[in-house]
Length: 176
Image 1 (cartoon, rainbow, N blue to C red):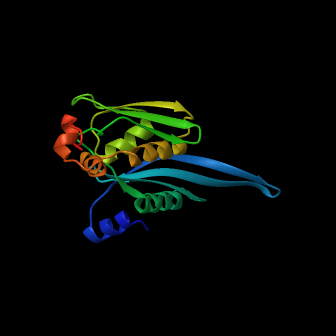
Image 2: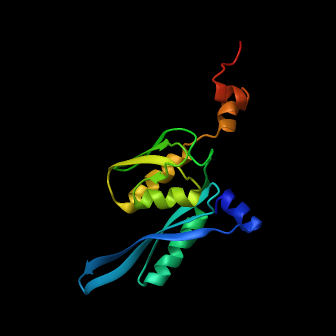
Image 3: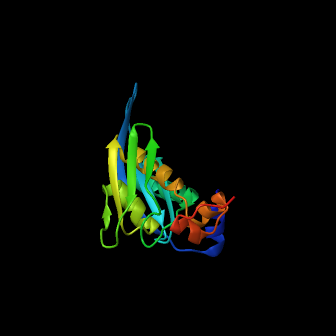
């Protein structure tokens, strides 16, 4: 379990759950067709923490439970600045690319269903996105997570550059 998941478990935070997709899959064997279900789920607290998980089982309720457990284990923290993301980022996974850009207040979340669910539960209110390549919901969800993992907060950028956060915002370069 990730350290963020451990902290959340201790803090007792409440998370909203959302099922993005339930897909029936079939495996053809010598004995016939074996049906199973794959579920893609998202959990988030609408305050910068979100997790995505996939669950597979013979019955839908079991698959949903597994997906939610997986999502809770994979919670990540993303920086949200004034209701949007701090900077433009591209998330990639296999053949999918998700471009995410910060947006002005009042824009809303301009995204497809999978990306929208993840960003909404993360607490992002205004963002522009463009999905390119694969439209498989699982791959798109992973690409979105990979993208938001690469977001840096102003404090983190300031620490990396060894300057103050105010200098990052104003664009002042480090002396010396």
